[in-house]
Image 1 (cartoon, helix red, strand yellow):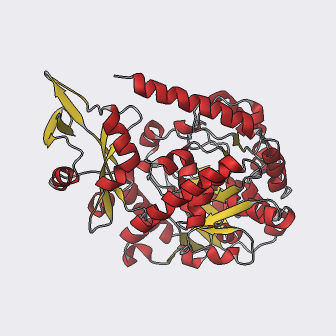
Image 2 (cartoon, one colour):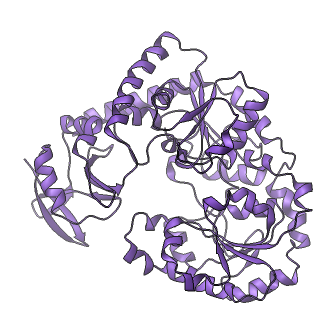
Image 3 (tube, rainbow, N blue to C red):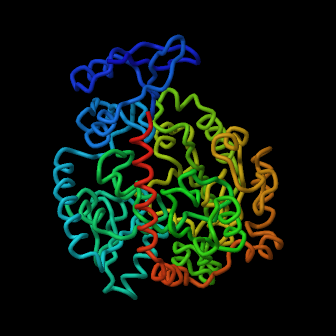
Length: 500
């Protein structure tokens, strides 16, 4: 048995013990060490070098199919377990509990078995699944597209996936083909469905970071149409969206020639795989009516940082992210304006702010209503790199950008556009108060040049995106796509077996 090591500090390795796929032995090793989210690489020592810990084929498949057997759940709702990468390297996963239970695994097993039989016996007329973030929302493009299908193509087998405790579940009342996340039907449709349609990756249709096992592998490679959150620009997509990847969507919806050029030139798609339809979520917006709305709010909305995932509370409140936003909130709370100040951000940010930070400010949560409805009464958006800025521009709401950590953001996330030359909005990275005053001087309206350039970023404003997306979906050659995916998977398995 090989000895395991982890790197605690740069160049400093700590011995864990001898590796064995024994739950009792692993439990002792995992429990007696401190772990950081989300993945910790494991090493083995060869001579004076520390190399990635390599699993043999039997160990790899054992962890691939049965990693849940070795999961340890702690009282603070964190989950710890050994994890096998596609390169057969050993990693320790330490993540928040995603809600998967033994009873759900039992349902999953039988659903997989039944759906596989049905796919063999009845390969035609398979359904499609629509969902949103973590299968817990019904607010944006997935919801808009599903409503369109319910109204105009009700006979087509299209299902919407959502958690039973979702704050948006009441919005689906009266709509057909609603599926509860974690139910037998959910697991069945994951295998039975022919296509996912969502503004999120396939993992959001399953259990977050539950990435081992047969069902997880089917979900990971399922053909899907990526509806997007907003126009591409301020945030680079993960490399799993690159056009040549097995995990890439079969269609990536775009809003204009500007955006399609990003997808074709930087992500490696041909134009047919990045159709210009507009975003389905904007079908929910009646622009002529929007222009008549009373806009009495200033919305303060910051996007989350991936490097803060699962960090503890003490680390979070000392982060640049928390301190910079807290400072900006104090500035905005002193703004002399008749507008209501609304703050809406990640729940972790909400929890860390205290009442003294929130004087004259409303902290907006899901219980107050969905974001898209809030936006209809917003006069000004203050944000960083959020795709919500594009929706504000579409709705003709001025935007102030406050990018306090631009250097780190460009290094770890990056952007498709030059963040020093913004295509719209006011740059508030210097003095936020000055930028807010400038927006007020403009009477909270877009500048004439912003209105003139709007058609460059939005090809349509006719609430017809879902109809165009439906036409795109109907013309997808899934038979050819699945054939190519099977070939790629077989090649990947062969490489895995041949590798030493």
